[in-house]
Image (cartoon, rainbow, N blue to C red; front, side):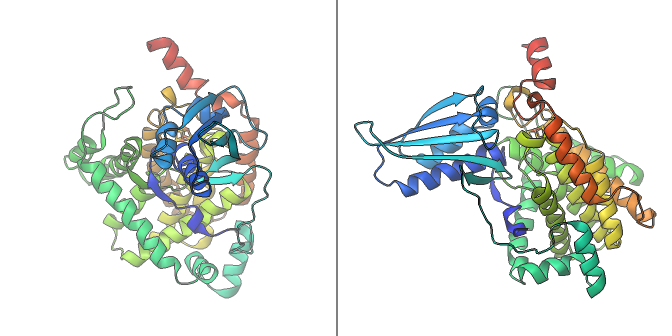
Length: 401
Ligand code: SF4
């Protein structure tokens, strides 16, 4: 299993797969071809279906500046290896093709070249939670110590930047007001919910503050601003919200937050390694479900729970999102995405509390539910895998526009 550094990418929203990754691919093609006069960019499958709403074209154009590329959308065609396909043609000033790059956006901001079996360096020799738990038990270490041993102590500087970016996004999002770009007329809500949370008594504090923090990041993402993929842009509000809320409730140091992010990263990495975190591949269960599992595990750690309870909370966080479809209205990462972050943050904390109140024993293991999520995702019709052809995207288009 690769480093958790590849799970937490810092970039501009609204989508790790549809914005960050195509931008990275375009920059790579440009760097490889300094003498290019023109670029033709072909986008396939899900990248083409929801690319305009996800600002895929803007991200590619930004990376290829000052050359203005020609972009061709092929929503009804798929390249063979992944639903998010891209083909870059590099042209000279006579329109002769100098070079071509075909590749895929495989989720969470990562790209893979067509036909290339990419071997990221193996940082974690154990590829599932049960082996990791056994290793930790035999050495008497916690999950964050396991991460530190595998990644080296340099991981803390990296996670410090991740944490700082997450918390800055919350603060920006709590202050921002107004309508989000894209034309749906979706107004930001984080600011008002956060303000109203001060009107509630202790019992309802969580119901105001926690969703406000998640909405703050999700709205910043929808506005195309800087956030961290956790594990994706679209689901990037869940973990920061839970970290901030829990750290406000009980005394928590900065290093304890970094250790919780390390554990969350391990959980997300296991799902990425054994299934997928790509909405185009497995639906929203792979994005919001994974984010919820990561945040639930992180919360258990911050609340003093055991590794067994972390595993249980992460399992529940994913299990109770099984089958969740990806059907964003207008291809924008707004409806249902923004509210999903708020609800998943609440659920993550519920899962954490439930696991802590239990002794950690349960029937379905985290490793099993990851396999089920993968299979469920492959059984979902493509309508519900980030194509905006089914579900809410279809209904609202028909009913309101
Ligand atoms: S519905 Fe879920 S998977 Fe789809 S774009 Fe929104 S957050 Fe991502």
